[in-house]
Structure formats: C-alpha cells, structure tokens
Length: 355
Image (cartoon, rainbow, N blue to C red):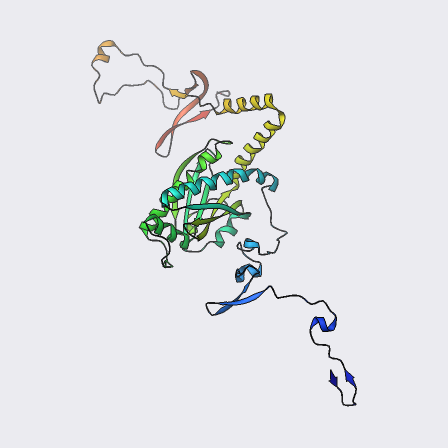
C-alpha cells in the first residue's frame, strides 16, 4: 500500500503473483549451482547445461534433451524413414563393439546409440577439436570411408584400461603420444572389424587399411558439401566411467546400405517365392568369375624347350599396341590393351567395332 501526498492510498502493483491474482511462472524446479567458480544453469535432474547448448548453437545443441534452433536451409540427403531401417544394424554394431571392448579392456563396457544427425562434412569437421584422435577405414566394395572420432579424454581412458588401470586417475589434457595413439588405433581397428558381421545380413563387405591422425586437416573422407550421418555413441566402462565417441558415415557409404535395406524389405513384402527369387538373383550377381588376359601361344622346339634356363628371354611375337583377348570363365569377353596403373600391371578395354 502506497500513500500519496494528497492522502490517497493506492495498492501496489507489485507483490507476489498470488497476491495480484495472476498466474506467475514457477521457477522452483530450476537451480543455479557454481562449478569452478562460475555459475551454470542446472536442469531439473541436476545436470548442468553447457553454455553452447543453452544458446542452441553448434553440433552439441540438441543433445541431452537441450532444445536447438532449426535451420530451414539445412538439407537432409537421407530420408528419415529409410534411416529407421538402419537402426537395427546400428544396435547390432554397438552390441558387438561392447563385447569387443569388454574383451580388450578386461572390464565391462557398454556402448549405445545416443543420437543420429545429418551434417555436411565441412560442418562436422569444423566442430572437431584441433588435438584429438581420428581413425578411418575403407569399406570395400562400397569405396567410401567410415570415420571414428574419439575425444582426448575418452582416448586417455581407453589407454589407461588397456594398460591395466582402473580409469580413476587424473589424465593430462594434451595430444596423444605415439605409443598412446598406437594403442587407441589398435582398439579402433578392432571396432571397425565389427562392421563386417553387422552389415552381413544386407551387404558383403570387407575392410581396407585403417588410417589414424590427430587432426582433421590430415583427413578428408567426403566433399565439403556432402552430407554425412553422424552417429554419437555413449560409452560406459567399469563402474560409472562414461564418455562418448562419434561415427561419421558419408553419403557414398550410406546410400548402398540403404538401397540394400530397401531391396530386402521389398523382397519380404512380395512373399516367400519372390523372396527366394530375389535372393537367388542377388547371389548370382555376387558370384566371382575368373577373368584372364593371355598372350597368344608361342611354338617352341623340343630341343630349345629342354635347354631353357633361368634368365633366358622368350619372344612372344606380340607387336606393341596389338590388342589381347580377355576371357571370363574361358569364354571370350572383349579385347584389351596391356598397360599399367601405378606400380601394378593392368589392361584397358578397347572398342574393336570401329577397327
């Protein structure tokens, strides 16, 4: 109550919402705690919200239930309906990775899919720290590379367990040494190996060489504007030690997998007979056929044949630039010219119709 100079009494506009009869916003479920001398917002469950997440920007936004801004110019090259069919493969992959880590580290490990997002390669690579651990492998015959990003703190945790520790020590914040990078690289290779059995129900793949670097500028698995599927996986080792790592699958890896899943679903919808026919057709296309390119036979006298020794040169009577015949399972297929690709011998298919 406020008294004016003329003696009139006027009720205050302030006061509690209950006193004014208005519905106020209840903030009783939010608290502010101090961490390292600086206050940070804490949610209902007591989890502190990172400043970048609270602002709604960056790749970290949207994780752990944090609302993020939606970019209407953001393109998703992979339909979410098709990606749902990929979830069982990811679950199988994380289950096998958990078993592999448990065996390698000698401590119970659990890996689960946390989020799946689509980002351009330049967006994802720009979000990675300068000093980190990155490993990639080629999936053959898909031809694309799969990238695994392990943050420094998680990499140190893996190294500690691999060397017989319990993961409770203070880990230095610095780039990995050559020995530490080699240890984490071995674990990454074991995890990459689980892609083969995980994808076997839909595709037959095998792995190429594993590459590992400490900075993303030394590794580019896709074009800057190419969309990649970023799978964030949560990791729990031992008693309450948690972390996360990410898998980056570019479009040239995901599209063959999604197409194979579409074919598999279509075969299941068509019925048993069509399913068998489809499987037989797929298997027929996957049968390897021996192909060969041979020089024409050369007649040699018996006397000369008996006197052949190491170092002798046998003329093939083949003119330079003359085509050879390629055979598939003993059947003539096409004509080729011998050449080389790098340090390996190769052949070029030529069109003989105009000659």
